[in-house]
Image (cartoon, rainbow, N blue to C red; front, side, top):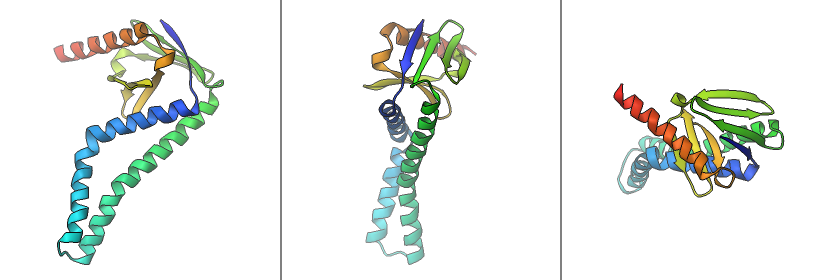
Length: 163
């Protein structure tokens, strides 16, 4: 089963924003709440100036790193987009794995590499490594295509649990 996809700047930005929001809410929300509590407490409790400065800098580092990570990820993705033939490429799914083919080349990946399929209003994100994903725009893939991917991911997780 093959899907012909076409990326543009807005699509990539939206996908990266969706990813960062999900990761932020999944992994960093409680840390951010704790940092806000620490930041506010420095203004209400008497602490030494160096500790207050250290706490403020530490608390402000988290959102700064998030914003910089978002910006750098978009810049990197836009450089790759420029290498594609007007943003066009194809994704083929089969029983053995997933194949991505574009003007840059061809890549075959086994289903064991993929971990999750995240669903958003505008796209799907197929995660396959630490902070790596393939964006599947909702309006460019069929429900059968996504269903096939879900089935393969479910089969992988079931097989991993048996071992």
